[in-house]
Length: 126
Image (cartoon, rainbow, N blue to C red):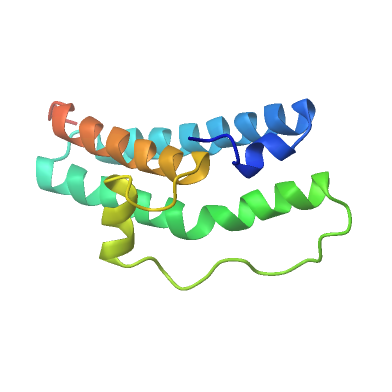
């Protein structure tokens, strides 16, 4: 399924760096969610999960592009952030109907992790 993914065109060092960057960005997103959702009601937690997923999908490509610039020296500097994703775009990623590659599936997994955390996090007084 992922045999032709661009991830596999990178060197082993490039792959490890990309995995580390992805883990860092995902971890920061999850930590921000947990920090902001603590003690909040379910509606707030679900809304926050979707807003953070939206922001990740929209803005993270610029960070990944900067990483690729480090790996591939002759990539030009450019803004790769496009227009904000629509609700349909987010749904496609959450339902894994978008492109079949590691990047899109990882984003969908992050979205579901945020939603599951929102659903099962208990509301505790501050």
